Length: 329
Ligand code: SF4
Image 1 (cartoon, rainbow, N blue to C red):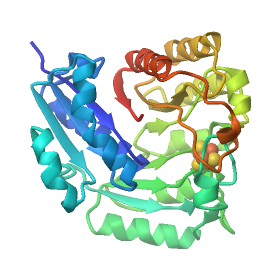
Image 2 (cartoon, rainbow, N blue to C red):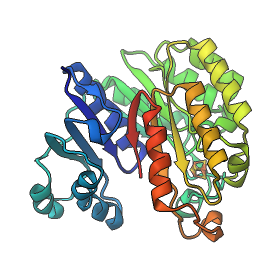
Image 3 (tube, rainbow, N blue to C red):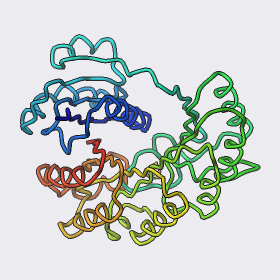
Image 4 (cartoon, rainbow, N blue to C red):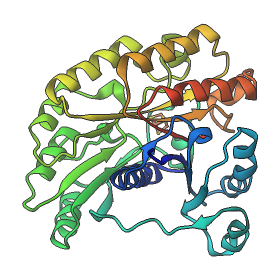
């Protein structure tokens, strides 16, 4: 009988990538992904200490798991843990583990900062400001340096990577030149926006031998009305045809997504459209968040009218529909 694991991920995209690494490591050791924390023998909490509210939430997890009927044999905490909090966490977790050393050490290379998109639920354009792209040469220099120092995994990071543009290249051009750097490495990127994932980019990626064949393509909702109110600027149909094109060119791609449940006014029917989309696409990994209002955003002025229980229920449904469930609440 296989031991089953479940990973709860909090925080940024780097934490998401780390959770995927933890999942891969556990599977190598014979663990299987559980459909929920309730079924898991091992629950790993990958935390983030960026905000105090995020730290406070971690203290409530053991109780929350109990309430959900989850009784893991082991509850492990990992991620970004401040020294001052460690002692308190030791009392409520079975084990605190350092993030395992990467089998394949990676370099996290920012290519841009900020975002011009103004999705109505997101604070990034207000906290980080407008999109600023680093120079092409500077990025290539950093990638070369990382590869020469023996790093085998290169992550190109930005809030919206496919909006990247320097004086000389767009994102597709940057990808091509990263792929041309000599050395034994794979590269990845996070996160692109589905609205401007061009055919040129798909073609180039499909020809890049060093592309790690993992793609996080945030859908956020499977309903056109909600997508419009989120200001995402694509439709479900466009997203599906994009995935179709990507899979046609790269059948071995591992696809993950981000989704939000309980956006203000999300009806049962609209949520069912997201369920339908999840079933159609069959994501390898999904990071599902329960909507919570963020001050300063356009959606903050909308009534947060979906109850906590309903958000929990929708969250569970989506998590069950992914091959390697994970959640961001
Ligand atoms: S969700 Fe992503 S694309 Fe939308 S505003 Fe935030 S960072 Fe930009």
